[in-house]
Length: 256
Image 1 (cartoon, one colour):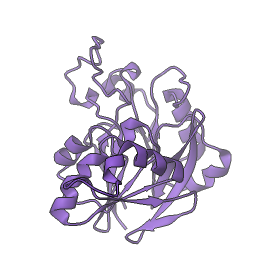
Image 2 (image 1 turned 90 degrees about the horizontal axis):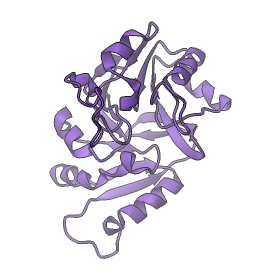
Image 3 (image 1 turned 60 degrees about the vertical axis):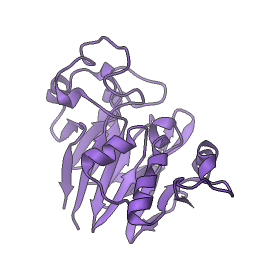
Image 4 (image 1 turned 30 degrees about the vertical axis):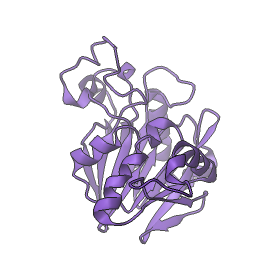
């Protein structure tokens, strides 16, 4: 079973460049230093599964030429992971089908509040058609594709990472309980957040992410949810150990 992973965005909540910032990274001419908010598209057995739909969702769908979505997994309720959901309207119209969103109960409650107009009893014409599906820490399936939720912590906020086949994706975390490790072991590819060199209250720093990679031992690992504080892509990427790379927007990988 082959899957193709497209990194739609690899930046932190503020993106890179950050508004009004005058640092050298934000003014870099290297396209790998331009980062939209974090999101990935998994194409597997003809199905398209998206993880997170942040404020850059519309442009990410256009840039990746995505024509349909079979499901959207939401890691948690923060705006940089949910704000683009209104734009599923285009898929509703063109594919004549509602969009299925999968998240835990707390996150679904937040979505109902944030997009209340989409769930009102008297809906205005043309609003997004979204079906909310509640998940917990048990495996579930989207169109026959098994999804394994992985509980991680974003400071004090419980967040889900996800494993799909041999691909594991963990963003916005600074702690992975040891009892969740078994869900990750054996991954061919692990994507994990590494915000900056210094410690952060709610994200793994790059050194902490590298420590987790050493513990979890995937065949390959990629760092995502990167801020301008991490440095230039080329410089940081060249410093990483074998088998570990900085992800960048538009990067595509295949897992066989």
